[in-house]
Amino acid sequence: MNFLSLSDIFVPLVYAILILLFAYFIQQNRVRFNPAYRYFVAGLAAKVVGAILFALVYTFYYDGGDTTNYFLGSKAIINLFYNYPADALSILFGNLSPENFSLFDGTTGYPPHYMWKDAHTFSVCRYSVPFVFLSFNSFIGATVLLSAVSFIGIWKLFLLLIKLYPQLQKQFAISLLFVPSVVFWGSGLLKDTYSFGAVCLFVATFYGFFFEKKKLFINGLGLFFAIFFLATIKPYILYSLLPGVMIWLSFKQIKAIQSTFVKVIIGPAFIAIAMGLAFFTLTRMDDSFGKYSMDNAVNQAQVMQEDLKREVYGTNSFDIGTLDGTLINMVSKAPVAINAALFRPYIFEARSAMLFISGLENLVLLAFSLWVLFKVGLFRSISLIKNDPFLIFALSFTLIFAFMVGVSTANFGALVRYKIPFVPFYLSVLIVILNKVRNQHGYI
Image (cartoon, rainbow, N blue to C red):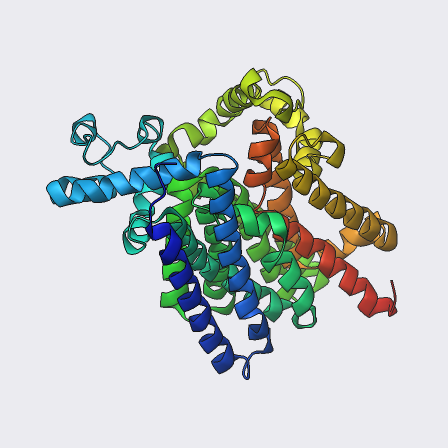
């Protein structure tokens, strides 16, 4: 446990108190104008507690892992800065040359080489430098700071959901702010915390920029940072997001048209143009995605699946069938892959305490899904979704991302982390269609 220091005793406590005092001040000043702010302190407190629990679990239960290696990588960059500030800045801006790596020594510490070799992975080390520095090299303190900052995007998405469906504040608070797996895995010093916060920020600022067309500079800046973090850490999430938001935007425009005849004529053209723009954008960005590019997607999924099925993972691995490196074969696994991402590990597949908790949560999610399907009905659910542009986006993002996660992940330990960006969106779909039926019929 060479990643812990005396600062891990005091720094997290001090920052937690300061963060929650700041949150309380914001809540008291804004709740009178927006009742949704009554969840602000509780939501941020859940993130802080989740961060501390995450750090403690990885310290004493797992004895380290990727999260501690990210921390050690950031710490090494900070140490290098005192001797070679220009070179350290060069690394911070993404110059991962062999010459720069050779500057590290026993006094600075060495960034994990497997992370250095992967620019997307090492981005977490680079972006975490401010949190490690401000926490005085405290692993737990840096985790707390990152979790608090990532809450910005999550809270903005929560406010958007409340704006779209004002009567569902409590339900959205539960689905976005308090789902145990999302709080835990979305609060650590990991790719997942950055990517989940960026997904939430992306959706909220996309709506503000393209739908409301207000605060264009702030929303545009937020959208830029969200895309930047996703593109440099987990670019494949953009493959799931962009088609969905373009469909969302086009359906919003179609719904605004009064004439049914015009809708029928123009609607398909709107959707085709939106999908074309999404495809064009992704292909223009594709070269910078490296191994995550669309050209490499099928092969990468096969490599990742085979790697995660190695014996080292033991009984934590699962099998959705063999991938042979062809697109048709990969698409044929969609039903099994989506089911795995949504609902596995089943509770009887859990072989550890952590997976048992995930299995229990998945059992609740599966039961809730079946209950909504039984109460609302499949065809009525489809009808309700197709008439709500946001639900179309949320479901399309859920299905596309669940497919990508399920088809490329053959290990439950990785699966429970990778899935968290779509969980709140999937729950939102269930919550909204249930509420729509209640409003129509007065009962469920």
